[in-house]
Amino acid sequence: MTLLNQPSQHTFMRNGTRTTIDLGFASPDLAKRVKRWRRCLELQTTQDNHLFIETVFNISAKKEHIVRRAWHRLDIEKLREVLRRELRELGLPDLKTKADIDKYVDALVRIPQQAQEDCVPPRSPGCPQT
Image 1 (cartoon, rainbow, N blue to C red):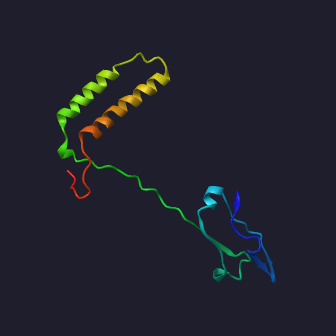
Image 2: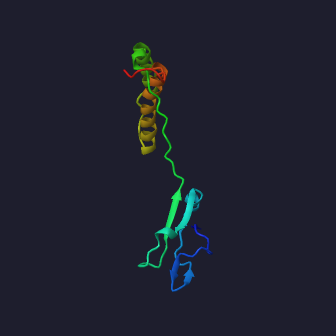
Image 3: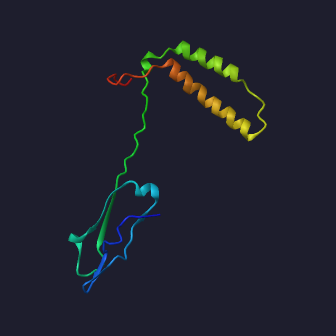
């Protein structure tokens, strides 16, 4: 764990005494994303001796790139041929173990995905959906 606040920054005040008793911790990975850690002195009240603490992290969601397909340009005959050929080559092996089944299912899923990539071109950014 990584300490976020500086030990010299007091987080508690009472009767003129200032101490650092409120500590902020984060995992090392999250600590690298700290944008700001500060005491909010402007929010101090007379009812509580602890200072409010604001921690802001620099976190952004990663946008997944999705390839849109121009289905109106599908070459259906090519798709059928690719699927027939690949599925024939794959066949139906003797599935004796869970590993055999996993490998076979992975191949079954991969074949139509690859056929789609081969037979349906990506849609241009300005192309309307169909």
